[in-house]
Image (cartoon, rainbow, N blue to C red; front, top):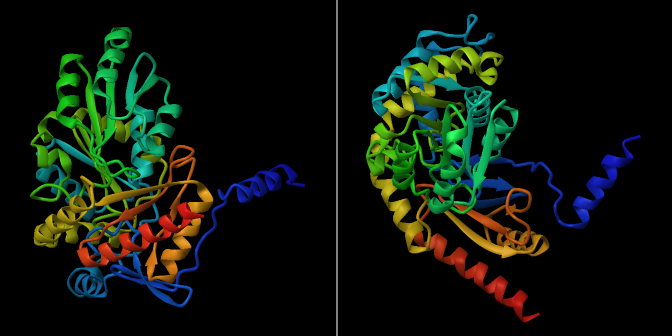
Length: 380
């Protein structure tokens, strides 16, 4: 029984594709404890170090947390909406200057629910080829058509629109702002021009930019001054905020449509009130105080060749990438190998994910260790 699955797993192991869950002993802001070692964590999305931060957790629980329960026990459309949910949605709408906001249980729930609901029969989505799996899955679940254009290739996108746009009713261009595997940033200003020219709606997933870019920490759209031009902006709370959940903000008509048609929203139990309250508290009380740290983090990343706080180190082979992670582990760094299907074959890599308290000197030593290891490999 299950021989087919066992064969697939054996093949994954033979190609250094096999993944397993890690048994971590604990986390403390920029550090992680694993196999008895204290390691600098470079595989986290805890960009502002609010997650696993004892001081932040204690402050929240002492000032706000005691008023909220640990379970909602219902979907939002039943009895799962308390005042704090509406307050967080209104807070985000006000910050972005948008008509309405809707909370989701995760970024995956949001992207799957948005794409599958909005892209109906006779509609079309034009999606960057490197968009997150959740966006791809949402498009595949939709009843509409979708096209994927080469990554950040505006000429290819425009050619595609010239050829296809006239055959559909509603059209959406979907892109991430900061791409999670390469750390590069979409040409959002050009996409705004294209979406206006071809009468499309524009959806931007700011999952890795929310809390990092912009004066208010609202993302790349804020930093570029194009928030008003983007029809729907998606953000997550499980990264820079250090909480859980996600949101989409934009047109009141589209948000109301999602409330009524987005299955990942309708059929999910609402997040616990205490998590919603924590997210609201972080955004209201902590975001503005992080600006200097955020800017320093992005400056450090730029010194190492990245436009964002995500620095890719492409190694190539799966085994070589896994071996490099083992070397770094023994030198006090926790990194994870990023392998296909997450990235294309032959481009396995380290994804160095910076957090606000990581120092430039720490990163310099890390890069030296990486270069030493890769040099030794190439000499063999």
